[in-house]
Image (cartoon, rainbow, N blue to C red; front, side, top):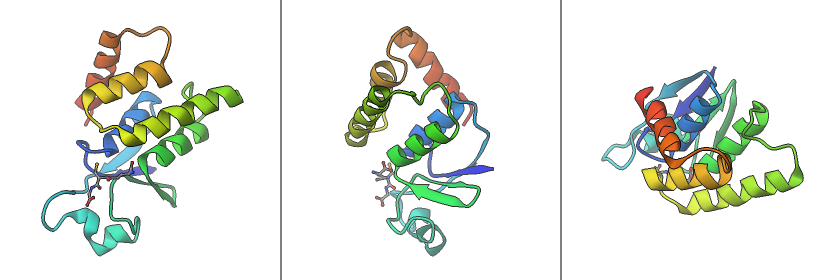
Length: 139
Ligand SMILES: N[C@@H](CCC(=O)N[C@@H](CS)C(=O)NCC(=O)O)C(=O)O
């Protein structure tokens, strides 16, 4: 089963949110960061990500880190409605993920990202807010 390593209140939320959005079964492995003796700096975690940062996933033995790379990988592998078939659509997704990298993981950034890049046409902001709350309530 897919394992997602990290703390929900961090960029790990991006991956957790995607997994929930496409109904992907996963095991969340909590990893502390930004505290003394953070688990993300311990040898067992550095063996997964030598960069010592969260999130990381282990997808049946395939380990990858960097939230945007993880999400692009998962979206393409599980071929949900989030991954477009056209070159232009994929260009848009890369555009969104480049922006994603410079934004924090807080609420408004997530809503903006959902609104403009993931579900651009027919969802209102309040519906997007409910989607995010639904995702958070499962953590
Ligand atoms: N570009 C990376 C950034 C990863 C990152 O900086 N994660 C933070 C948590 S949001 C972290 O692990 N901080 C611990 C540290 O830097 O020591 C990504 O998007 O995955």
